[in-house]
Image (cartoon, rainbow over all chains, first blue to last red):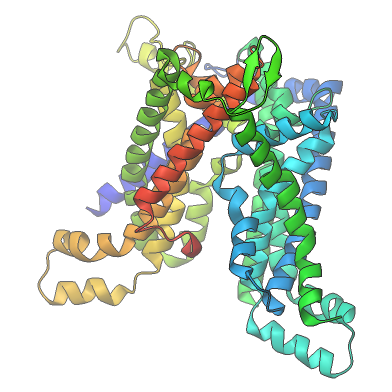
Amino acid sequence: MRALSWLYLALLYAFILLPVGALVLFSFQDGRLPVPPFQGFSLRWYADVLGDRRLMAALGHSVAVAAGSSLVACALGFLAAYGLARHALPGSALIRAVLIAPIAVSTLIVGLGLLLLVNRLGLPLSLWTAGIGHVVINLPLCFAILYAAMGDQQRSAERAARDLGASEAQVIGLVTLPMLAAPLAAAFFLSATLSWDEFIIAFLLTRFEVTLPVEIWSLLRSGLSPRLNAAGSLVFLVSVAVVVLLEILVLARRRR
Amino acid sequence: MSDRARGWGLVAPALLWTTAFFVVPFAVMAAMSLARLDGRELIWGVHWDNYAQLAQPHIARAVVVSLEITLTVTVISVLLAYPLAAIIAFRVPERWQRLALLLALLPFWTSYVVRSYSWLLVLSRQGIVNQALLGLGIVQEPVTLANTRLATVTGFVHFFTMLLTLTIYASLRQLPPNYARAAADLGASRLRTFVHVILPLTLPGIVTGAFLTFVLCIGDYVTPQILGGNNELTLPQVIMVQLGRRADFPLASALALVLMGLVALAYLLSSRWLRIDRV
């Protein structure tokens, strides 16, 4: 039974890690096809990707959209969470439901709706419209994380600060925000990874300037190539780095 | 400023954003689904023509294909993920569990595009599976694996096994260990303990994960497009065809609402056991 468990574990890990393993391994392929046999180690495809103007531009766009949309989602999510947690508002259950709703709808539908609206208003498609879409899907997440993190402990600290004469802005800036540093970081990095990896909204809502997943998508038409492996590996490694960072942040908080 | 006014002021930006960029677009989409295309001209009003297109064989077929793929993927993923989550929760030493989970979820954090492409490396005619089969002499000619439903299902099962491992692991960890011990003390076999104690208590975790799988799987365009190809289309693929080549926005909107209807149906069917807030 025990041996069987470890065998199962090994098999499932192989299944889960096989494709990304192949992706990364054959990005170093010294040949024209990213399939076995492995012909030797080469960094030329990375040099190729890093020297490609279109891919590098797309990478810059992705970073800008991920950082910008996560920042906006965190800010809006924080204010709404603070407002709902600290003030008695009529219909607060309904407000929460509306703020959470986009998470239950597939991104294809969010993207399609925004595309129709942008078309009707006669606005051009750009990185801005894709960024707006990313805020829509990340706001529920940021709101939920921050709303759950606002406990009674903070409430007492905020009350104490108010009693000592702090203004509302001082309470938020000097008490609430520092106490929520870890969940804020978690919300920010989680939405940044989701935006970085997101395809369909970016695909529907951008035109001339695109994000990295959209650029990779258009390269897919030419079939398998070690160059695509290198580009994909870069996308993957950035996400993993952010997730590991997040894990360390959360772990560091637990230990404290 | 009154307490309530201040509260509204704080909530307003998020509420306005969601209203302007989610609720309003949704209303436009609903209205669009009832509009009609006359040549290239859009005629607003209440027409049910778009929904009537569901009766067309290629669209009805896409709905069936989507449902078949999604249900297959959900069942296989639950069956694969449950033992994995249980092994990580009960066999792997406590201090290694976070690392084991992180490793099992590593490819989860890749975009659909890159993940689907990486499956092409494994499944294409010159890919790893075919090279292995040829090398072992099991087949003489490469087998067609990419551009099939099998490839789509494999790509999906890969992703959702990770997602379900996470939700099932979370619900297994919430079980008090005493319950299993008490069942054993009362003479229950391991199988009986599992069927009558552990399984019912982890059911909300399973159903929640399965519901998320259903929602994300049925709405995904990338995986079936890259791995399944154009041999049989899923509902999101048909929607994208309307948006691209045909520029038939009314039909695309109607089909998007049908897609939402399927998700709502899944929600109603599973709501009894659903614990979204507990994930």
